[in-house]
Length: 475
Image (spheres, rainbow, N blue to C red):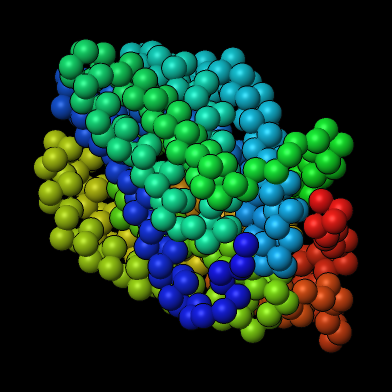
C-alpha cells in the first residue's frame, strides 16, 4: 500500500480528509442532538434532557478510553504505512482491535457497576437521577462495539480512506436518527427507547468499520499471542497518556455539570443542549484534529520535517476559518435553536450567550486539539496529557468558580470557555518545537541554550526511548 500523504498538496489533503471526516463525525453529533430534541417533545422535558445530560457526561468518560485507543492505533499504523511496512501495519491493526475489545469490555463492566455512585457525584437527584440511571444501565454495555468501530475508523484514516472512515460514523448517526422516533414515540419507550437506539447504532458502527478494514482493505493480519502481548507495550505507551488526555475534557465537563446542578434542572438542561450544539457546530474542527495525526504520521515515517511543520501550520489556519464560519451560523441559528428546544428563561439566555459571544473562543480548543494530534503521533502523548489536564483543572476550576460567584450559571459557562485560550497557544508553540527537535525522525535533542531550553527538552521527552521500528520481515 502506497502512503498517500507524503506527496501532493497538504492543504488539499487536510480539506478533503476533514470534509469527509466531518460529515461522518457531525452526523454522530446530530444524532445525539436529535435524541435530545425528540425527548424535549415529551412531558417532563427539562427532567428528561437533564437526565440525558448526566448520562452523557458519564458516557463521555468511557468514550475517552475508546478515543485514546484509536489515537494509539493511528500513531503506530500510519507511520508503518508511511515507511512502507505493510506487514507490520496489518499486524498492528489486528492486535489494536483485540486490545481495544479487552480494555473497553473491562471498563464497561466497571462503569456499569458504579452508575449510582457516578450519578450522585454529578449531583443528579430525584426523578432525574432515576431517568439517568435507566439510560446508563442500557447504554454503558455497548461501549465495546463503539470502541471497536472507532479503532477501525482510525485504521481507515491511517490508510487515507477518508470516505470509508466517514461511513463508519455516518452509519451510526443514520441508525440513531431512524430508530429514535420509532422507539421513543412508536413504541412509547421514552428515554429507554433513546438508550436502545444508541446501543443499536454502536453495533452498526462496529459492523461498518470492521467491514472496511477486513473486507475492503484486508488490513487485518494474523493474530499471534506472542506478538499480541509484545504490541501491547507500544500501544499502551501511546494509549495510556492519550486516554488520560481524552479523559481530561469529560472530567472537566463532569465538574461543570456538578456545579451547574446547584442551579437546577433548567441550568443543566441548557448545558446539555449547548453540549450538543457545540460539537455539531464545530464538528469540522473535531474532524480536523483526527486528520492531522495520519498526515503528520505518514510524513514522520517518510522523514519529511518540512511537511510536518507545514501540516501543523495549515491545520491552525484551517481551524480558524472553520471556527469563524461556525460562529456566523450560530448567530443566525440561535433563535431557531431556542424555539425548537422550547427553551425559556435562563435556559434560553444561556443558549443565546453561547451562540452570540462565547462560540469564537472554540478556536483555541481547536488549536489544542490539532496540537495534541501531533504530540500523540510523534510519540509524545504525555504532552497532550499534561496540557489537557492543565486546561481541565487550572484552566477550568478557577474560571468556573469565579464565574459562578459573579454571574451564576451563565458565569460557569463563560469560565469554562476562557480557560482554553492560554493552553491552546502553549500547545501549538510546543508542537512546532517538538517537530524541530525530532529533525524529521532523528530523536537526538537540539543543543540547549539555557535553563529554559533544558526544561522544555525534558518536558518534550527528548531523551525518551524511540518506539522500535519492526521491519516487514520481523512482523
